[in-house]
Image (cartoon, rainbow, N blue to C red):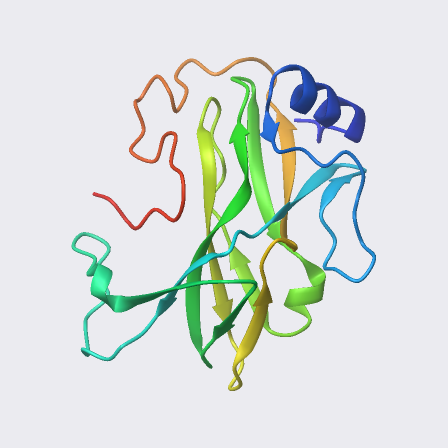
Length: 184
């Protein structure tokens, strides 16, 4: 299962609209880097955030998630409370080819500050803006910068196309835009 290089990512992004909008070179000056890298694509976090709060002493239940557990914030920065998390989404919209699985890793700049990013793999033929979970593991408030890099996507090519893709299954998070909360 090879990791796909910059040339392939560029060809897919420009020819098959795999990533929109696509930044062809890595931007780094004065920002947390984003754009095309040697073997991946560093995505940006958008300006919409859902910050977890426990004002109602709710129970976190993935089968019956209470949207009231979040406060919505929009803007160029997001402050995540200590030992809490926020949901956000990528600026970019992804269209994954049938023979590709995408894995996401957090940016080292944030990881070195105790800020961890989690995204489940992007399955073959999934498309949409990616919902991102950003955890602040520190005892201090943490600042996240919108429209700057938040995570890196690695594109892994399978030995052949899969028998059943995410689109074939009519997956519940298909074509999502914005932050998608848990669905059963």
